[in-house]
Image (cartoon, helix red, strand yellow):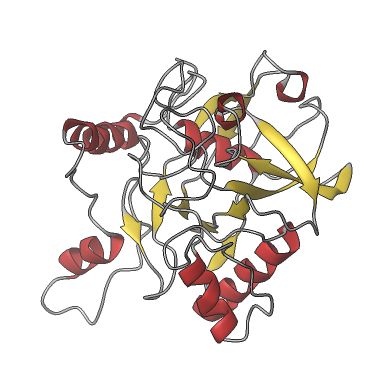
Length: 292
């Protein structure tokens, strides 16, 4: 096992993952950060504590905000030896816990930004439905507009995840090509080769089981913009989990593949890119947040 996570955090994650995988249709949810803070504040407290939530805890900063899950600090081997753009495999250290969206940003969340005047662009849902489907047809520039609005509205440190953070969170302690194992198999993700007849469209976020960190749809459904500039391989890449913001910065990285992708492109290590201002019907994003 290449990934090393602190023992205390691993205990929490293992317990959560055990509950999830033990009950496919009705699994236990991790305790929310707000609930934990209120429980610890005591009868004479004036409100929740300001402590950083524990790994595995979830929270929302507003009723219409993305549900966030706390990912522990740790280290992992990023990339693969299979494809040139994924080489060389290299050790990355995530020194501090961070939060990441449990789901891809939805049309409902995007439409709230539009209604508030923070986002001007109204992407099409291509007739598939809005609400809790992932927002698509958004560029990297559009995603940055959204996270800037969300940070300003909530006063929290919202941003796009770095490519390293994304892969660390998507792997959730695994080293296999997919977080669930070595082959795509059925009923794990929405892609062209994920079992049964391809849907050729997005599904409601959370339609498939989450990974060990509690994240939905890190494989397939909508491809996800991350902060990093495109580089042809990992030679010289940061090893501290930060975004790589040099070289081909007119192009930005997408991770996770989409409903339109073959199975090979929804692997945890798979990566590709588009121009930062391109809007494509399979591309969306999820948000991240600094906790300190």
